[in-house]
Amino acid sequence: MLKIDGLEKRFGEKVLFRSLSLTVDGPAVLWAPSGWGKTTLLRILMGLEAPTAGAVQGAGRVSAVFQEDRLCPQLTALQNVLLVLPGAGERYAPAVTADFARLGMDAAALALPVAKLSGGQKRRTALLRALWAEGDTLLLDEPFTGMDPQTLAAAAALLQERCAGRPTLLATHDRAAIAALGWPVIELEKQ
Image 1 (cartoon, rainbow, N blue to C red):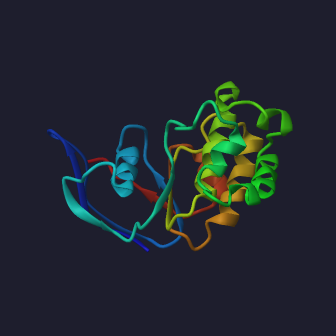
Image 2 (cartoon, rainbow, N blue to C red; image 1 turned 180 degrees about the vertical axis):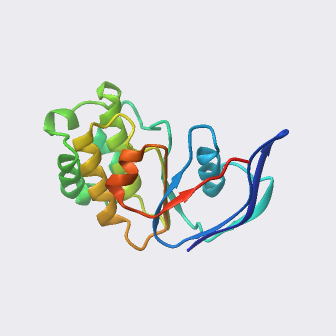
Image 3 (tube, helix red, strand yellow; image 1 turned 45 degrees about the vertical axis):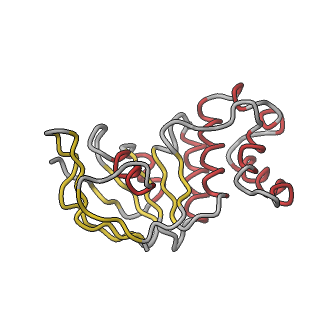
C-alpha cells in the first residue's frame, strides 16, 4: 500500500500542492490540468525528487512510464522490455511478443530498432516495459500519448487486467483515457 502523508512541494514561492494525503492500494488515475504537479508528484514517489514537506511510505520497488520514453534506441522494442527481466528474459519473449501484438505491433515493427519506431509505438514499448518489470508500485505518466483510440482501448484493457490490487497511479489530463480505464480518479487541486 502506497501512503502519502502531508506532502508539500514548492518551487520558490510557487506551491504545486500542500498537505496532500492519500492512500493508494489499487489502480487510480491522478487527474489535473497540465502544469499542476502530476509529474512532480510521480517523481517524488519514485524517489527522484524530494518533497518540501511530508512523507511517502510503502512505494517499495517502483516500475514507471516517464513522460519521455527513456528507451535504448539501438535495441528493438522486445529487447527493451526484456532488459527488465535479467537472466530470464528470453523465457518471457513469446508472452511479451503476444502483448505487443495486442497493442497492434507486428513482427515488422518488432524487428526495427526503437529509434525507427513512431511515437505511439515507443509509448507502447515503455508501457510494456513497466508492466513486465518487477515492482511493488506502478507509476505511469501520460502513458497513452501518441496512441490512436483503438490502441488506447487495447492498452487500457491490458492495464485493467494487470493492475488489479497493485498500487498504481496513472497521471493524465486525457478524459478519454480516464473513461477507458474506469478507475477511481484522484483530482489534484490548484494551490
